[in-house]
Image 1: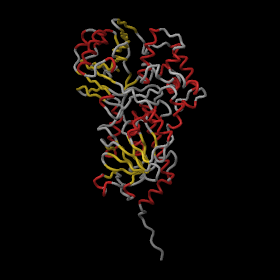
Image 2: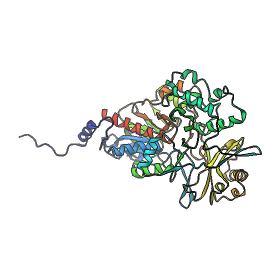
Image 3: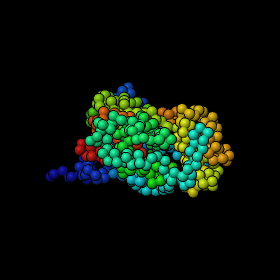
Length: 498
């Protein structure tokens, strides 16, 4: 008589059946087993990883910023339990960070805005039940330089010459946002900096400061150091409209999150629970070209079939890869600019008193320590908060001294009420966070035509993620979310093909 069929197929059989059923965009469930984390102290000789199948995860994600957590959330929603997120910091959120000012209020001291067309991060916020509200800009902006002071209503813009901006918008039509190196004019455009091009536009000296501020804020570099090809690709992301990139009203700086931008990562991490490991930097990745990849971390060894690397390209240089990465990918990582860490401050007042004077709390400064200051108060103006991007070259690094200097500037701009702040925070990313080499990528001329082709192709079982890899809105929170979705789908499809 034939053996009675078993009613409990083996875990391996279940896994193969589930993967077989998964379509290219379908959710998949129950792929893989095991916790995956092996402590170095638990390994004989601390020299080799465990070999049991149950110790191999399907996916490991490096980085618990928006990209990495979005990828992990997608895996979880697809039904997978065989993954981990490894984060070097003692918190989640990457380049987003909330500063608690007291009484339940926050001020963002990292990335904070979204705008039109950034539908991926909008959808994520809606799913996480995070509200949004408009950035405050109503009223007059204060322009300062030397001993001069001028009040002007910029009507929600940065005050740049719109005739010149329109030319940039038109030029951006030929530069695809996700692959600027594929532009038919790439060779010509990538030879120039934005500054080179602006020099041909007969811009008045007094108007050039607006371009300098806009480029420094958006791209992390002055016009002389920003590649024209790259800048056009950024405009292309913004529906090929300059004013949707570098303005406040109806632009990429137009909308904020209730509870601050870091709340998105905090909520995702809460849903993921113990799938997120903090203070767990990855020091070495070996066997990425084989069936099982081994990650050497400060908390032991982790083994996985696929690895999503959701960290900044330049930060990858701090990870040792064995074998060495392909020459083109390694060259891209070495050349990636990482010199714009940014410094951002928050000054807190009992109320936004500047609004009573018809001022919007915005300051642009020529030759001073402030690139741009703005009203960062909560939705209903319950308290007054001023945030500003500040220059290390023009401001002492000591927070107490810096606060005193900034307070005097604010008093010149808005009156003596600015002397009476109740809290101050100085976030110098280059000094305070060793895992954030740069906040934005100041891509120079010549970069994309030299290194662009190596940006996205996987290397063995390594899948590259992070906002810099996004097809649109690269460098923004929306780009991070898009890249997380894409890398999760890549991993699921790759597992399906195993």
